[in-house]
Length: 356
Image 1 (cartoon, rainbow, N blue to C red):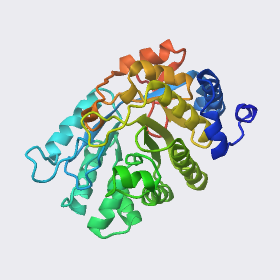
Image 2: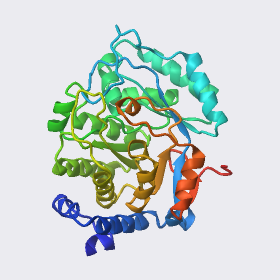
Image 3: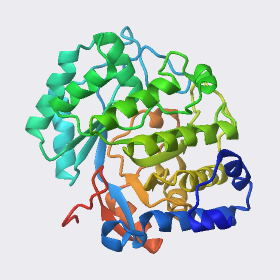
Image 4: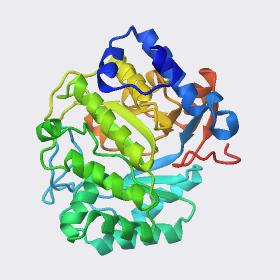
């Protein structure tokens, strides 16, 4: 505990011991590590600031051929409610975002077997030309593995072409647990742990920042959660491209994958451990989308320094039971009530000047 307080790196066996601490002690250690990580950020005021972003999740298609057991969102091409978004609908959604003061879209879809490389490049080029102030935070690593197979191109080449067309950063979707035993149980047709991390490695080397995620509370062990954290930390040591880490519990409503719901205590412990273990990842997001605004606010005392997105639109987790919604005003109020100053940011954690 003293080594954690002093900022020293811990190993996997120590992480397993820390997880069993009384909750208030683990919280104090995570908060200390938050202070150490943010002391020099934002002009020296990092400890007093909690950030958030105004963006919109846009799912460009729900057609997917990997059939994850934890997903209610996917459809086959033959389903009556399968869709691919039109450019007109995409424009309308982004115009609404810009009107609300937003600066980013998070665009992801299923693993559509028939959309062409040119379709994606045309979409990115269109968005970059029409909305130059809106960052395109797009496509999960598992999507890029899918693109590589469908387009018969190396992952790095696909990312390079997407970047040239307008892609600004890559989200950490599809991380689940970065252990293949787990991935074979819950999403056997999806990218392996090495493939997922290979996309992140390629993106970082091409100059694109990414986030890292973890969906926990299903078939994994605690040791496998720590193994996931170790993979993220090791990659960050090599490339330094992760801007943030986000963890959330599995939502099981209506899914094929059945597991006891991870409660708020498990969530807070896991987030606190992530803050302590990921000593080279500067930002930890609060997982209010699955846990709700109140627990999201409490999570600010468990190592989080960011409230994430207002989630102007979210379709995937919502269909598995997560119904929580927040406005920017709600988010600012919760941050202020916790004793921090609320500041809007972009994906690179730069503060947005003159934000309302």
